[in-house]
Image: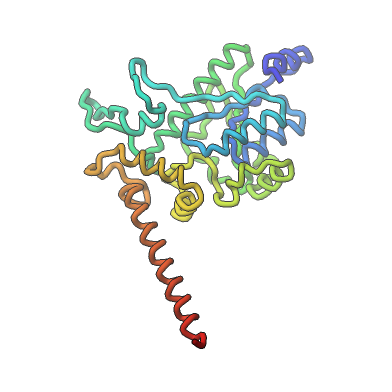
Length: 290
């Protein structure tokens, strides 16, 4: 479905499109989008930020959502600074090569933003900047009355996520949380999506969250499952980790000094488990008559 045609159709009926769906592609934002459509609410735009660190299954999911709804998802991507030439993706370059200038000076004291942390989620900042810029441009292009309603897929059992500086309204948009309005929990959202045939390639069998595969803020258990069930993605994380200077403590990967340190830890756990299993098998065999 052509979004410009949709805009014209609603305006011809005296309507004013204002819902802009902030679409992460996970169970909650997917359920939110489908429920908005089921309720007959007009959708001005569906916006997904592609940082390049998503699970491959997520891009397949986006195509399936587009086919299911007949609506086009707008994909935003980070950009490199003017003049930067690199074979790396923009986020990979920011992660490993972005010059960090000491505040109040022109002195570059570090190269690379390094892994995001709970205190410095620079990747989220880039996403929010891209969304704000897109919404401003979208508003001016189509002449909507401000503010737009930015629909965010926080579930009814995630009320704690509604607080914080990133959740403030602006001149261009006000935050709206449809799933909270409707009392839809995370479990409800997943069941709703599964009933309509969305599976994410099985990602939710392993993880509660399916955003960036390399997120340092995920649990140790999720990182173990990533290493075990998605070895290619784990290998990519090790490669990314190798781009950072070993001597700099700022490269810390939340749970450990580095991804390489986590690999050593997980490998040691595997070896211990294998040894324990061998001992258990040996004990059973010892009880068997010769």
